[in-house]
Length: 331
View (cartoon, rainbow, N blue to C red):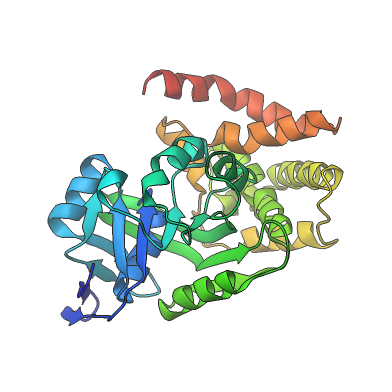
């Protein structure tokens, strides 16, 4: 998107950004997560193509992609958007922003976007997205990644960031950190996106998994926001028990989480703005297919593999499963 026009909504003015050699970036899945980070990258002058579908795609094509955020509002317009990856051509970076349940399908669809030096960065919740991508693409292009953000699609073409400093964490899946990761980190930094390069991406993935799977499951079951869960002693106790089971499964699979991870995770959730809910809970409450199987289902499966009991999470999962199956049957 050379010479993309970026209109800052807060100041109601237009800004033309040009770069002699912009990085070519494809956002496969331009929803609440991919769309947010893609918009920031486009605002920094990179050549970004948003791969989306339906009314969200049409709105981006017609009116651009709008982001409302405490970090600064913006409108990327015009925005390059398509639902056909085959029309894009090879890119330098692919950010995979689809739900965890769609990663295997995405792995096939993004093949036309790849060249020998392309980096593929998954930003899903859960701990198996990179594995799913590698199974189809091989290990060379795929790096480990996750993001931290609370955001949603407010309406087609409009993403609202409501909380948590938007952050991307990257790391090598196997072996030491190489220069590609630091180059990628600089691209995010130049776009004013907070980025962390970690020496243990597997630990980072499990720490986030510890946070989002119990929160999303219990939130979907109770249908209240995280402040209410934490302020209610009985549900807070359930949350802590669910997290303890995640630690046990991680440990059994060779991931050593820090001794204070439970306290830090609970403290983090307690300090979120009142009313905050995770994406899985929002999908469950709206009757849409969610990441229940990719998160809680995966946890139960990994526990069974090494005979780790997960009674609290099993109960939550079983309670949510009938509605989840109905949601899938209706799509």
